Structures are given as C-alpha cells and as structure tokens.
Amino acid sequence: MRSFVVVAHKAVTTPFSLNDLPGGAGRMDIVARCVNASLFLSHGMRRDVDFYAILLGEPNPPVTIRFNGERVRYLSPDERSAASLIKKALERGAPSSGEDESTPGVYISKRSFEDVINGLDDVIYLHEDGEDFRNIELKGDEAFVLSDHQNLTPEEESVLEKKGARKASLGKRLYHADHCIVIVNHELDMREKLK
Image (cartoon, rainbow, N blue to C red; front, side, top):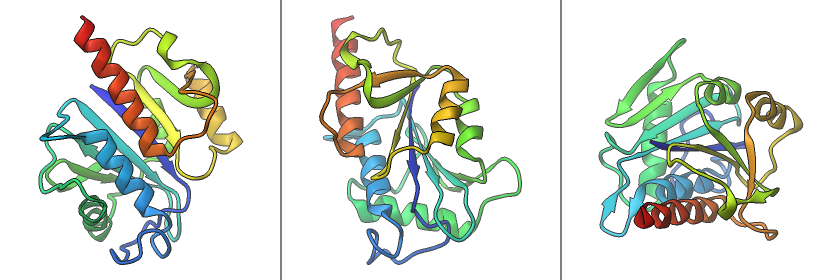
C-alpha cells in the first residue's frame, strides 16, 4: 500500500466553513486537492493508497486525518467533498489516543508528524534537491512526504533524517503538492505496467 503524507502548516484544527477553504480554513483547499490526487482515477478509486494530512493550524495542533482508499465512502472528486469529510472528522474530534473513524475510511487522531513518520516503513521525502525520482528503485509501498505551500521546517526535516528517509526530486522546478502526487502515482502506475 502506498502512502502520501502532506504537512498542512496552516490548516485549521477545528470545524471550518466550506465556503472559505483557502482563507478561513488555512489552505484546506490544498489538502483537499491532495486527497483527490492521491485517491482518484478517472472512473474509480485507488484502493491501495493511504493519505495522511497533518493539520498544524490553530487552535489545537496537531491533528492527523487519514483517508484509506480501500474503505473510503462518500468522497467525490471535488475539493468541497474532501473538505466536507475533513470537517466532519474535526467535528467528531480526535480521541486522546489512537484514531477514530469519523466516516467510512476517514480517520482522525492527535498523532504528530513524528508519530506518523515513525509508523511508516519506507519513507521518501519529495524535495527538489533529491536524487532523480525516475532513477530510484521503488517497490510500490513507499510513503511519500511533501509539504503544502510552505517548506518543511528544519525540525520536520530532522524527523525525516532520523527515520532514514530517502530524498527524491521530481525535477528542478517547484510543483504544487497535488501535482507532485499525480506525478508519483503516474510513475508508479507505469512501473507496474512494465512488470
């Protein structure tokens, strides 16, 4: 199962208005686009993907929202739909330990970035200064880490370094987080086709 981990530095950790995803919700629009890029195909769903959003905005960070492609229901391929499921999870609230399922296939927890990373095995940090992504050997069950519109902090990069994450580059140009996810999914799909 492949995973995508997106650190959302400003995404709010309390229920928000679906009418103001970029502003009042702290760039929740980016998170919603990343959910869709991770999970959707043209006429189907990627059932072999877990998507983690680490929400670090006010008032009660961290909150982790996990979408499991195998179990998720009620998700349509638009930003508002993904944001609505995140809002429902935040309305439910994160448990003091473990994770709760707010709607089928959507889970909420108080896990930090470090907690999530330490729970994953083969971690790849998508960064423009890494090794060319197309030259990296992949098994298909890696966890790909990227950030929202802000870079990862030195502390977050230190967590990845301690975990032994490999650094991979999709190119010298900077792409939107959701576009990076599409590129990774496409490359992995092409590699599977060649097997």
